[in-house]
Image 1 (tube, one colour):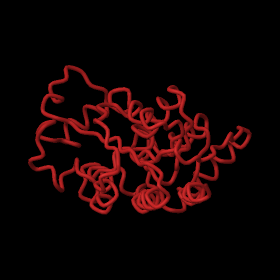
Image 2: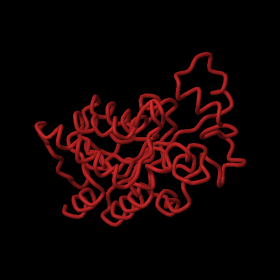
Image 3: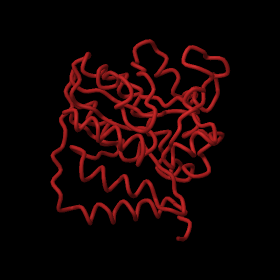
Image 4: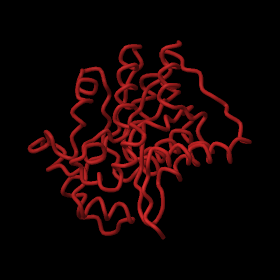
Length: 245
């Protein structure tokens, strides 16, 4: 299979083609309500979003084409300004995680390349500026003392962390979902949150995915977002909805 190279024009054409093919599906929409709605961002970390990150070679073109970094920043900015609570679901691997006896394809890759590695759950030695650390431009939002940072998810979805508990404890039942990576952690979070009874609006250009010989992860995610989420928004639509309430 030919290696897929994404350009701005290709992404636009792809999105239009997918939108056209799925036009017959209903769009239930989601009404943002203060006190019931949160912004959830998966893996806003250097290994995904920095040119120095270990996955940049396979996700970088899509991140740049979607303006993912800038769009997540816009979501953070508006959520904070509007008093909408922000939840971060991070991905960390500790030394004991490297002792797993079996792994899926991407799990093995992440372990092999040292993605999201930390020295231990109770240590922050070497964390600052590492691949597991937040992208620098997001730190003022995340480290403001008002953002909920959950325990780490270990594979893709929030089944292995306390995101659902933290959301429910704050009375949240509607989620604006963004972050990395589209067809892995972001999609898995969408699926589990839907199963748990949350309304979910996915922000399609505030995520991105790998473009590899085996297939286009972003295209796959767009299809599944449209099939399952309550609605799929652009960043502009999401920020307008957050400001409208």
